Image (cartoon, rainbow, N blue to C red):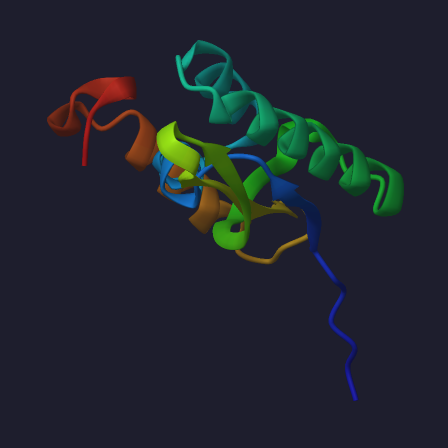
Length: 145
């Protein structure tokens, strides 16, 4: 039996105080990109979710370098997903003794990085990244899908 070496490392952030829909807007932009490019994108995007996701990307890269000895230049974001968490419910007092519910949504964010130098299909990943990032028909680096 051949044991396959684990090449994917995760970082998980739970109970982050923001809507899952707003976090997905940012996550969809970084999925499948290289680590260095992801950092540039997250630092330049104007959304509040970017800070939490940036911390998780840093954490996933630190986990990969500590656990597998990976170099940060070889990392790609292989898995990025957002799930809904619990909703914090409060009551706001209103006029004439009534109350109004306040719902604060939370979300769970999972970032998975993969070291492409440990994978057999390294050339396939590099061509995929190069074509998706620098494709002129999609508007270059910042083109929409």
